[in-house]
Each structure stands twice: as structure tokens, then as C-alpha cells.
Image (cartoon, rainbow, N blue to C red; front, top):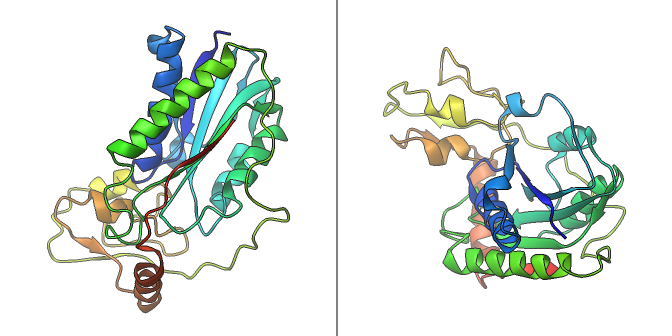
Length: 263
């Protein structure tokens, strides 16, 4: 069954984007429709202002990173404005080698509630935003090959009589969200005011006129600015950030988690 492939992703540090793209491209290749992929990069706030509607001829691959075991909370109101018309969807989450807890189930539920039918789902590993020593360099070649194989599995399923996806890991009620601590990165003297951090911030938390000014009430600690800065001039020095980072290093650096898919 040929579908119009739509790739939708929130990806501050590019890992989720790589996974969703690999899956989408493999499905499109299997249907001889590689030029027909339409991407919706919802990382920047300007791309999350209006809703979307997809129809029965679409197949939507939607990907988000896991934040504390859940779908990022600020994305939920936007996802509630995305509607399907019995549209097939493939929910995908990426996490930093700790756990994805209820995030995959929550993403699946959000879209199914709005007129989508889940065809398959996957959980992949990406480098942790708090430390490049946790799941370093992931998604790596092995992860992307796994995503490619997942795309092939989905293509095979599309060639048969379609059946909705069953249960995925997670529990409802979802894991409670804890109040976030107000933190923001500092800017060192190495900063040359290039404003790359401003353009990379998914929450518009960095002042365009003064890149050293970061709104801690908006910052989600995704470290997009830290990883994108060519001068290495952004970093977190908050004690709580350092404590969380150390706890993650001590408990979740190893063993290396592997992707999981569900069809």
C-alpha cells in the first residue's frame, strides 16, 4: 500500500532527526517514493505555531526525545493541534541510555486520541543531553542500521492487510512530572557573539540582543546551545545540574541500551 511519507520531529541536538529520517527514507525507498518525503522539523518555536491535518493517504513518522520518562510537556499542546483522518502513524522516541519509561506509550496515545492509528513504534538511544560520555556518539552506525531495518519491516507490513499496533511498554497513569528546577547555561569570555546559540534554541530562551542573557523560566536544559557553540562558550554550572549529571554518569553510562521496535 503506497503512502505519502511525512517525517515529523523535535530534535534539539539532531539525534531524533537522524533516526526519523532513516526510517522515513527506508520506507519511501521500499515504495519507490524517495522524492515524496515531506519533513516537518518542529524544533524551533516558529514551527510550532499552527496545527496540522493528515489524511488516509499519509504515513506519519513522529519522533521526540524523552524528557524524564515522558514526552516533553511543552509539546503536548502542539500535538493536540495535530489531527489525523484514520491516518497511520509510527511513534518514535529517543532517550539517553537511562529509560524511556512512559514516553512511547504517551506519544502513541496522544496521536491515537487525535484520529491516528499506530502502525508500529520504536525506542532508540541518543547521546544524553547532560553528558557526551553517556551514549556517546549515538545514534551511531549500528543504531541507524537498526532504524533502516525497522523501515524495511514497516514496508513489509504495508504490503499486507494492515493491522493496528498492539501494546507498547509504559503505564497509565503516566509517570508523574516533577517540577523542573530553574537553570540556564552561563556564557564564558570565549563567546564572540555569533548568535548560533540563538538560532539553535528550541524555546527562544536566549536573548537575540544579548546572547549572554538566557531566560531560565524557558530553558529546558536540552544543551542544544552548548553542543552547537563553535567556541565552547556555553555551559551549565548549576550545582543541581552537576549533581544530576554525576548521578547519570554513575548509574547509566553502562550497559549500553539497544533500540526496541514494535510492530
